[in-house]
Length: 416
Image (cartoon, rainbow, N blue to C red; front, side):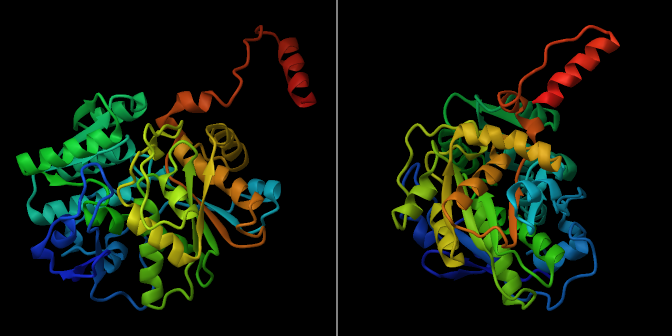
């Protein structure tokens, strides 16, 4: 069960599990401080199932068939995944897209897609006998690690920018993590976390640096495909920060194609804020690496990075799928929060709503047709950043406690 080896995504060298823990030793020599992660390792399973497991996608039986774990018992006892793929009739009508779906990953335990990576990382930490796992994060990966670690009985240490949304800070503190707010950026937190892991012997969950972050996130692609079988999406739009979620989605569809459970893979579209668009900029320039966005900023804190750590693999994944990238303004992201909530019932944080904002841009640019099978991956709940959502709505003034006031307010609203 779960037998595998690692393969370097840069030089192609293969390694046994016992030989490495994080990145390719050969390519790691090219690592630049603060630069993209070199020598990212991909998990290659020795065998994949030839038919869909009958169990739920969040069950140990299903996950053990597709993930590199020694035994089902390695998995933490926390239900992660099996989030709904919504048919969203209201949004379909509004956009004239009859085959549009929303993958609602806000339903994960800590409210984001990052729980999928943490589930596998903590499973491997248990197999390796690790007592402490650490991560740097803009917020969601930290809360995900804290949640799954709490369910696993493993200590979590998280490094986050002090500017992280209050709700995310409260979440990770409530789960009992050691929270280290950094007076600096996510990139500063990433470097400090990596140094601390080397110094104190903690298991490093940092995105891309730990190969199981990518492998864990592939489960979202497995679920999308299982829901739509025998069809497969034509296009999946994915909010991108470091590029790990997109790489994980690509890995999931690639594994399914390899074992014959799907006939084709979808085009992947990376969606990034205009103020933090290193990956999309590289796609537009047909570059093999990214140029840092110094002072990167966006209302979508989860997507705000100066140097996307998994940029190299992400760029290759997008191009191999025949997809591309789009940028969206902060104003468009804020509008999309309300639009998504009104038309689908899904309340997303800015990073999650960016997928819908990106869909509008992709349609305007002719990157997809309205009759194609399109999936929007909504990566995080709006409860993580209510102040951002509040910027896109008008708070009504109080009314008198009289029926006449109700009637007057209702008439005003209906006239709009």
